[in-house]
Length: 252
Image (cartoon, rainbow, N blue to C red; front, top):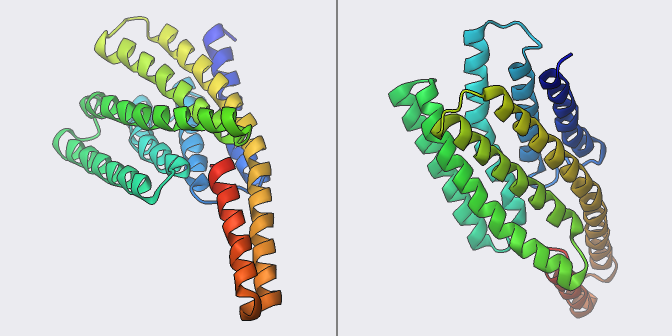
Protein backbone atom coordinates (compact mmCIF):
# COMPACT_ATOMS: atom_id res chain seq x y z
CA UNK A 1 0.00 0.00 0.00
CA UNK A 2 1.50 3.34 -1.08
CA UNK A 3 1.28 6.65 0.83
CA UNK A 4 -1.72 7.88 -1.17
CA UNK A 5 -3.78 4.77 -0.40
CA UNK A 6 -2.70 4.75 3.25
CA UNK A 7 -3.63 8.41 3.83
CA UNK A 8 -6.87 7.88 1.95
CA UNK A 9 -7.77 4.93 4.20
CA UNK A 10 -6.99 6.91 7.37
CA UNK A 11 -9.03 9.83 6.01
CA UNK A 12 -11.98 7.54 5.30
CA UNK A 13 -11.94 6.17 8.85
CA UNK A 14 -11.65 9.68 10.30
CA UNK A 15 -14.55 10.94 8.18
CA UNK A 16 -16.70 8.03 9.37
CA UNK A 17 -16.18 8.98 13.02
CA UNK A 18 -18.45 12.10 13.20
CA UNK A 19 -21.55 10.43 11.69
CA UNK A 20 -21.08 7.44 14.00
CA UNK A 21 -20.91 9.78 17.00
CA UNK A 22 -23.94 11.75 15.84
CA UNK A 23 -25.93 8.51 15.91
CA UNK A 24 -24.45 7.09 19.12
CA UNK A 25 -24.79 10.38 21.02
CA UNK A 26 -28.41 10.66 19.88
CA UNK A 27 -27.90 13.98 18.13
CA UNK A 28 -29.29 12.68 14.86
CA UNK A 29 -32.72 14.30 15.42
CA UNK A 30 -31.53 17.43 17.18
CA UNK A 31 -32.07 20.65 15.22
CA UNK A 32 -29.82 20.75 12.11
CA UNK A 33 -27.58 17.78 13.01
CA UNK A 34 -29.21 15.59 10.32
CA UNK A 35 -27.61 17.95 7.78
CA UNK A 36 -24.20 17.40 9.39
CA UNK A 37 -24.78 13.66 9.28
CA UNK A 38 -25.64 13.88 5.58
CA UNK A 39 -22.58 16.05 4.91
CA UNK A 40 -20.12 13.59 6.43
CA UNK A 41 -21.75 10.64 4.68
CA UNK A 42 -21.38 12.51 1.38
CA UNK A 43 -17.74 13.49 2.00
CA UNK A 44 -16.83 9.99 3.16
CA UNK A 45 -18.50 8.52 0.07
CA UNK A 46 -16.56 10.95 -2.11
CA UNK A 47 -13.27 9.79 -0.59
CA UNK A 48 -14.20 6.15 -1.14
CA UNK A 49 -14.95 6.87 -4.80
CA UNK A 50 -11.71 8.82 -5.17
CA UNK A 51 -9.71 5.87 -3.85
CA UNK A 52 -11.47 3.51 -6.24
CA UNK A 53 -12.55 0.92 -3.71
CA UNK A 54 -15.50 0.07 -5.94
CA UNK A 55 -15.10 -0.49 -9.67
CA UNK A 56 -18.00 1.58 -11.05
CA UNK A 57 -16.28 2.70 -14.21
CA UNK A 58 -14.53 6.03 -14.57
CA UNK A 59 -17.54 7.90 -15.99
CA UNK A 60 -19.98 6.69 -13.33
CA UNK A 61 -17.55 7.41 -10.49
CA UNK A 62 -16.91 10.96 -11.76
CA UNK A 63 -20.63 11.68 -12.11
CA UNK A 64 -21.30 10.40 -8.60
CA UNK A 65 -18.49 12.50 -7.18
CA UNK A 66 -19.87 15.55 -8.97
CA UNK A 67 -23.33 14.93 -7.52
CA UNK A 68 -21.81 14.57 -4.07
CA UNK A 69 -19.94 17.85 -4.50
CA UNK A 70 -23.14 19.63 -5.49
CA UNK A 71 -24.98 18.22 -2.47
CA UNK A 72 -22.28 18.72 0.17
CA UNK A 73 -22.24 22.53 0.20
CA UNK A 74 -26.00 23.01 0.80
CA UNK A 75 -25.82 20.33 3.51
CA UNK A 76 -23.04 22.02 5.47
CA UNK A 77 -24.63 25.45 5.05
CA UNK A 78 -27.86 24.04 6.43
CA UNK A 79 -26.01 22.72 9.47
CA UNK A 80 -24.47 26.15 10.02
CA UNK A 81 -27.95 27.44 10.89
CA UNK A 82 -27.29 25.70 14.23
CA UNK A 83 -24.91 28.55 15.07
CA UNK A 84 -27.31 31.36 14.10
CA UNK A 85 -27.72 33.75 17.01
CA UNK A 86 -30.94 35.39 15.85
CA UNK A 87 -33.94 34.41 13.69
CA UNK A 88 -32.91 37.17 11.27
CA UNK A 89 -29.44 35.69 10.78
CA UNK A 90 -30.90 32.23 10.34
CA UNK A 91 -33.32 33.56 7.72
CA UNK A 92 -30.46 35.22 5.81
CA UNK A 93 -28.52 31.96 5.84
CA UNK A 94 -31.53 30.00 4.58
CA UNK A 95 -32.02 32.56 1.79
CA UNK A 96 -28.34 32.18 0.88
CA UNK A 97 -28.76 28.40 0.72
CA UNK A 98 -31.83 28.73 -1.53
CA UNK A 99 -29.98 31.14 -3.84
CA UNK A 100 -26.96 28.84 -4.03
CA UNK A 101 -29.09 25.79 -4.82
CA UNK A 102 -30.81 27.83 -7.53
CA UNK A 103 -27.39 28.79 -8.90
CA UNK A 104 -26.38 25.11 -8.96
CA UNK A 105 -29.55 24.17 -10.85
CA UNK A 106 -28.94 26.90 -13.43
CA UNK A 107 -25.36 25.71 -14.00
CA UNK A 108 -26.58 22.13 -14.31
CA UNK A 109 -29.14 23.21 -16.89
CA UNK A 110 -26.52 25.04 -18.94
CA UNK A 111 -23.48 22.77 -18.65
CA UNK A 112 -24.92 19.50 -17.36
CA UNK A 113 -23.08 17.33 -14.85
CA UNK A 114 -19.68 18.32 -16.22
CA UNK A 115 -16.32 19.54 -14.99
CA UNK A 116 -17.27 23.07 -16.04
CA UNK A 117 -20.21 22.99 -13.66
CA UNK A 118 -17.97 21.83 -10.83
CA UNK A 119 -15.39 24.53 -11.49
CA UNK A 120 -18.03 27.26 -11.56
CA UNK A 121 -20.04 26.04 -8.57
CA UNK A 122 -17.30 25.03 -6.14
CA UNK A 123 -15.69 28.47 -5.86
CA UNK A 124 -18.81 30.39 -4.70
CA UNK A 125 -19.78 27.45 -2.46
CA UNK A 126 -16.43 27.53 -0.66
CA UNK A 127 -16.56 31.33 -0.28
CA UNK A 128 -20.09 31.23 1.09
CA UNK A 129 -19.21 28.52 3.59
CA UNK A 130 -16.01 30.36 4.55
CA UNK A 131 -17.88 33.61 5.18
CA UNK A 132 -20.48 32.10 7.51
CA UNK A 133 -18.14 29.68 9.28
CA UNK A 134 -15.63 32.47 9.97
CA UNK A 135 -18.39 34.71 11.34
CA UNK A 136 -19.72 31.98 13.62
CA UNK A 137 -16.20 30.96 14.65
CA UNK A 138 -15.37 34.48 15.89
CA UNK A 139 -18.61 34.62 17.88
CA UNK A 140 -18.20 31.17 19.43
CA UNK A 141 -14.61 31.82 20.45
CA UNK A 142 -15.76 34.99 22.25
CA UNK A 143 -18.48 33.03 24.05
CA UNK A 144 -16.03 30.32 25.08
CA UNK A 145 -13.41 32.79 26.32
CA UNK A 146 -15.83 35.08 28.19
CA UNK A 147 -18.19 32.50 29.72
CA UNK A 148 -15.98 29.39 29.59
CA UNK A 149 -18.92 27.56 28.02
CA UNK A 150 -19.99 26.17 24.63
CA UNK A 151 -16.57 24.65 23.92
CA UNK A 152 -18.28 22.04 21.78
CA UNK A 153 -19.76 24.63 19.47
CA UNK A 154 -16.41 26.39 19.19
CA UNK A 155 -14.66 23.14 18.27
CA UNK A 156 -17.30 22.19 15.71
CA UNK A 157 -17.25 25.50 13.88
CA UNK A 158 -13.43 25.58 14.08
CA UNK A 159 -13.42 22.17 12.40
CA UNK A 160 -15.65 23.41 9.60
CA UNK A 161 -13.60 26.58 9.14
CA UNK A 162 -10.34 24.63 8.91
CA UNK A 163 -11.88 22.18 6.44
CA UNK A 164 -13.21 25.04 4.32
CA UNK A 165 -9.80 26.74 4.18
CA UNK A 166 -8.13 23.44 3.28
CA UNK A 167 -10.66 22.57 0.60
CA UNK A 168 -10.35 26.10 -0.74
CA UNK A 169 -6.60 25.68 -1.07
CA UNK A 170 -7.00 22.38 -2.92
CA UNK A 171 -9.62 23.98 -5.18
CA UNK A 172 -7.26 26.82 -6.10
CA UNK A 173 -4.35 24.44 -6.75
CA UNK A 174 -6.37 21.95 -8.80
CA UNK A 175 -8.75 24.26 -10.64
CA UNK A 176 -7.30 27.74 -10.91
CA UNK A 177 -3.58 26.90 -11.04
CA UNK A 178 -4.36 23.56 -12.72
CA UNK A 179 -1.34 21.84 -11.22
CA UNK A 180 -0.30 18.49 -12.72
CA UNK A 181 0.44 17.18 -9.21
CA UNK A 182 -3.12 16.10 -8.46
CA UNK A 183 -2.07 13.31 -6.12
CA UNK A 184 -0.10 15.72 -3.90
CA UNK A 185 -3.13 18.00 -3.69
CA UNK A 186 -5.29 15.03 -2.71
CA UNK A 187 -2.81 14.13 0.03
CA UNK A 188 -3.35 17.60 1.49
CA UNK A 189 -7.08 17.01 1.18
CA UNK A 190 -6.73 13.80 3.18
CA UNK A 191 -4.73 15.54 5.90
CA UNK A 192 -7.32 18.32 6.15
CA UNK A 193 -10.11 15.76 6.36
CA UNK A 194 -8.36 13.80 9.12
CA UNK A 195 -7.67 16.84 11.30
CA UNK A 196 -11.07 18.47 10.82
CA UNK A 197 -12.94 15.20 11.42
CA UNK A 198 -11.12 14.51 14.67
CA UNK A 199 -11.77 18.08 15.83
CA UNK A 200 -15.44 17.68 14.94
CA UNK A 201 -15.58 14.43 16.91
CA UNK A 202 -14.31 16.17 20.06
CA UNK A 203 -16.76 19.01 19.44
CA UNK A 204 -19.67 16.59 19.16
CA UNK A 205 -18.69 14.91 22.41
CA UNK A 206 -18.69 18.20 24.34
CA UNK A 207 -21.80 19.47 22.58
CA UNK A 208 -23.75 16.37 23.53
CA UNK A 209 -23.22 17.22 27.20
CA UNK A 210 -24.48 20.76 26.62
CA UNK A 211 -27.56 19.49 24.78
CA UNK A 212 -28.37 17.07 27.60
CA UNK A 213 -28.16 19.90 30.15
CA UNK A 214 -30.44 22.11 28.09
CA UNK A 215 -32.95 19.27 27.74
CA UNK A 216 -32.91 18.76 31.51
CA UNK A 217 -33.66 22.46 32.01
CA UNK A 218 -36.54 22.28 29.55
CA UNK A 219 -37.90 19.19 31.29
CA UNK A 220 -37.76 20.98 34.64
CA UNK A 221 -39.65 23.91 33.15
CA UNK A 222 -42.38 21.62 31.84
CA UNK A 223 -42.64 19.88 35.21
CA UNK A 224 -43.05 23.22 36.99
CA UNK A 225 -45.79 24.16 34.55
CA UNK A 226 -47.66 20.93 35.21
CA UNK A 227 -47.28 21.28 38.99
CA UNK A 228 -48.14 24.95 39.47
CA UNK A 229 -50.27 25.56 36.39
CA UNK A 230 -51.98 28.91 36.13
CA UNK A 231 -51.98 29.46 39.90
CA UNK A 232 -48.30 30.18 40.01
CA UNK A 233 -47.75 31.47 36.52
CA UNK A 234 -45.47 34.25 37.66
CA UNK A 235 -43.04 31.85 39.32
CA UNK A 236 -42.98 29.61 36.26
CA UNK A 237 -42.50 32.60 33.98
CA UNK A 238 -39.60 33.80 36.12
CA UNK A 239 -37.99 30.39 35.92
CA UNK A 240 -38.46 30.37 32.13
CA UNK A 241 -36.70 33.74 31.98
CA UNK A 242 -33.78 32.31 33.94
CA UNK A 243 -33.57 29.31 31.59
CA UNK A 244 -33.75 31.53 28.53
CA UNK A 245 -31.01 33.86 29.76
CA UNK A 246 -28.92 30.89 30.83
CA UNK A 247 -29.11 29.44 27.36
CA UNK A 248 -28.74 32.74 25.55
CA UNK A 249 -25.80 34.18 27.48
CA UNK A 250 -23.75 31.14 28.35
CA UNK A 251 -24.54 28.39 25.88
CA UNK A 252 -25.03 29.95 22.42
